[in-house]
Length: 239
Image (cartoon, rainbow, N blue to C red; front, side, top):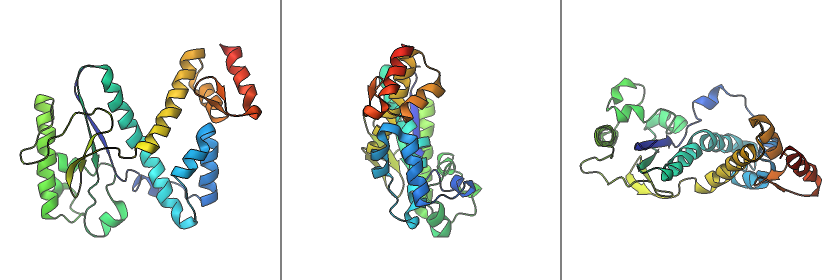
């Protein structure tokens, strides 16, 4: 729809959610990446490699944050190029001081108290003068966007409309950045667009399209290697 969009994600979206998930070993996570990413498995393994058991939690955190939050927001912002209204993208990176900040980082929903200038609602997190200043800036940006369709905050950096990779970091600094998990999200986007292409080309149900992708069909109609050539035959048969 041709309406302005403000969209973003947090640096550590999985820290609190992941505490309710089952633990996985380095070998288990590696095997899961192989099975999940099909023809892109080797690239995914390189981006989210866990060399030892001590690395697994961090790798899983990064994958979950990218897959469910960072990459979908980038994908949505890019799709706004099809309409006349702008998109504004943010990445919230502020981790509170003390033990809570060290453990949870910029956890899911951490930006809400800043956006409503209501840090006192989370009294279990110690706050500093920087947090209060950041809350004022975020609230100003959000109110201006709700009122005018353009996020502005007096005394804070100008928030540029999204064009390809721009975003505003809201954290220890408030600053315009580019990229931000771009390599990981390019891989995520390629997989998603291949699935969408398959479904449109041969009218496959989502479950079948995912099955074909995970087992070697890449970019709509090409096989990964000779061992997966029968998947190409399935696609041709269904076309």
